[in-house]
Length: 168
Ligand SMILES: Cc1cc2nc3c(=O)[nH]c(=O)nc-3n(C[C@H](O)[C@H](O)[C@H](O)COP(=O)(O)O)c2cc1C
Image 1 (cartoon, rainbow, N blue to C red):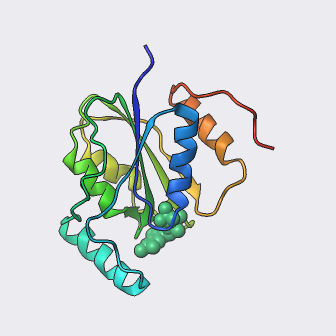
Image 2 (cartoon, rainbow, N blue to C red):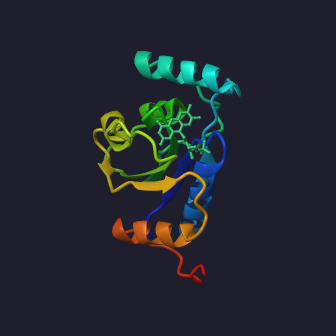
């Protein structure tokens, strides 16, 4: 039986969203963006300050109720930018609010090549009873071969995907 998959993603500036859309094209999964109820500041210093405070206190932002819940899905693809070496608080909020017991959880991350203090570990801690597969890490502006990279990652995790014309 074909497994039912959900792709959830928080993206501040569009890079993680591009990965999510590639996964959606290849898997035909349901795609759902995560939006904090209160958008993050555009000013980088204020943004950093807020993210650090949320990570320190573990008080994550409340989310708009638009985002699909995990109930009814077998595979959850969960994407986020690397923010301050870990997952962005909106994805942390979504993972904390959903019971992923027994589900396959495949994290995907966008980053700028900077510090990673354990993004995959952060996901595992929030979802201790999920079956966490290998994570996909994509450098922020990378577009070339993205589809092929995602396809290889899906294959490594035993996921079905749409065959198609390979990118040049
Ligand atoms: C507040 C903030 C903190 C960041 N911290 C890191 C970091 O610690 N390590 C890293 O590799 N990239 C870091 N980045 C870069 C982003 O992870 C990268 O640009 C990513 O592609 C953004 O994804 P998005 O366009 O989906 O928001 C940070 C970006 C922001 C805005």
